[in-house]
Amino acid sequence: MKQITRRHFVLAAAALPLAACGNGVNGNGAATIDARVASTMSFMYDTYPGTRDLASKAAGVLVMPLVTEVGLGLGGSFGRGALQINGSTVDYYSAASGSAGLQIGAQQYSHVLFFMTQNALSDFRSSMGWAAGADLEYAAADQGDVLRAETITSLAPVIAVVFAQSGLRIGATLEGTKYTRIIP
Image (cartoon, rainbow, N blue to C red; front, side, top):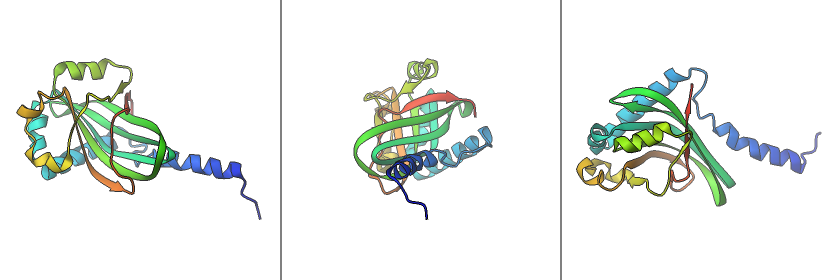
């Protein structure tokens, strides 16, 4: 019988988060992402009707249908999605983040970024890798039905709605998440 060494244990522990990073988006590339984006938007509109108004006022919408986040001391998240302008997909993006500290667990969630100004959308699209920062305004998922674009658009150029959380980890933050354009 083969003995499990510390090195085997560390390698197995390191592989676990990487295995979760695939989060179901595979070789079908763009078609798979597009189907998930459509499903996510439909779910969001049905569950949080106020987001329709946000989308209609936004210069662009980045939809991340499935983000997988894991942590055990060190943590990270990964997902793929699409940028839509006027309801049409114009680019595909990946979202990734890393973290360290007191953490344990895993979760999956969806999030949508509403770029409320043309300038915010242009900055996002022209960057080599845009990182979500402290200037990101969050709209709580349980308040989605009362969101009004007229009141929120004055608060921040980018509004994030995080929803459909499942797993054993509390909370989801997009701060520090890096978005990079991809070719699926």
